[in-house]
Amino acid sequence: MAARDADAALITSLANVRYLTGLASSNAALLLPASGTGAVLATDSRYALAAQRDCPDLELLTERFIEPALARVAADRGLRRLAFEAHEMTVERHQAFAGAAPGTELLPLGRAVEKLRMVKDEQEIALLARACAITSQAFDEIVPRIRPGMTERDLAVLLERAMADLGAERPAFDTIVASGPNGAIPHHVPSGRAFSPGDMITVDCGARHAGYHADMTRTVVLGEPAGWQRDIYALVAAAQQAGIEAATPGADVAVVDAAARGLIADAGHGDHFTHGLGHGVGLEIHEAPIMGYGRPGTLGDRVPITVEPGIYLPGEGGVRIEDTLVVRAGSGTAAPQELLTTTTRELLVL
Image (cartoon, rainbow, N blue to C red):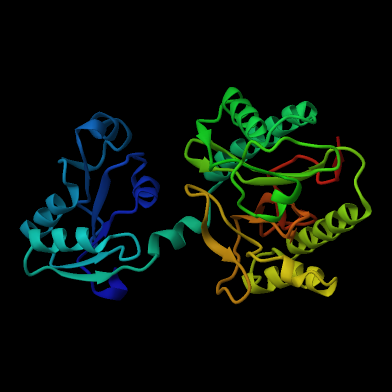
């Protein structure tokens, strides 16, 4: 805020509000003066008691239409230059906010809170580790139940139920199960396709625990794998390991991406790896940093990321292997990466 000569910041991203205040809500915003005192948390009556419980030191404003209400508070308190989250606020909401406080100057804050969120404290890492442990355990429990005739949708339901039984508050995202030729579609929606011997089955899943999101992908084979299936699995596994080893504090995210992508491209499958290598995880399933070719940024200490290379062969199938890990500064002989998802990365032949 000081760099922008702003009197206050208006935080409207729900994940950012939760990060700064502790309130989980579907309708909340925070007016944060540059002075560091007099912050006002606005939410509606559905969350008022939760706000009083979770944020007792904040001034609470209970209103249905929270952003115009905060605009009026800012005007009453002489806060004329407000930095707002332009990447999150819609044009319609911007107009309503500006109309409620004529004379207020609105300027972009940028992704300032997201940059703070990128580096996690140990409490956050512990919550994320629990989400990952639930994910790994649930996957390990349901894998023996995969059999011919089960459908993609059946497996997705089984896995989400297992995560709930183990304490997940909900899935971190819609579970992906892609079998046979559907494995060539990175974000395939589970269908009624039944598994058959010889299928590769890619499962992308994660549990959410206390607001923190896990993300893991494994590819298994039903029956004895063909030679080409073993080959691309081994290649993706080697690329993932190269990406993990490159993920160190100070590493450029594009360099980390290239460490894995280069192996796949050198093997002739560059056109079959079509997405970024990974992303940050935390209060959102996809957050900074984003690791892809040409992406800016560097990794730091205590930054959780995913590493998820893949090869997708249209009409045949695909392989993706993904883990959530924490980049660590390390000490002594400690590795600079802490793997949070623990399911084996060896090819599982069912």
